Amino acid sequence: MKQDNTIKDILEIVEFIRDNAATKEDLLQFATKEDLLQFATKEDLLQFATKEDLLQFATKEDLLQFATKHELHSEIQTVKNELRSEIQEVKNELRSEIQEVKNELRSEIQEVKNEIMNHIDGFIGLHQKLEIELTALHGKYQCLESYIQQIAKSIGLQLT
Image (cartoon, rainbow, N blue to C red):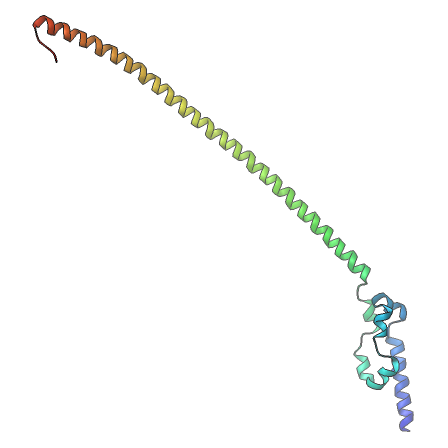
């Protein structure tokens, strides 16, 4: 009787595994033959795992929900391309903004240069005016000095 129950339990376990386990083709999408050889045989599982233990393993449907290596590579490539595109957009925006700043700086520098040149021109004009006035004053001074010397001579005053 006990042997019949054990055989019955083993049959239930085998049927459960057959119904819920992934097929060879399913597993080959996720693991190589060498990877599969590392797992325990059906006999090993029957010696150590109970029906409750086996219910905790992933089912065929669970395994099919995982991404394949090709899908992961494809997704990674898509993300890389999106990142490259976003980086290129940021680079283009930065170039545009840098160019705008350069143009603004050139414009402001030109304005400052013009202001400085106007101030220099004004200063030069003022300097020339002062030089002309100084020359005129010098001429007047010489003329007045000559008159004073003549007056001093005529009244007999000696200037030192």
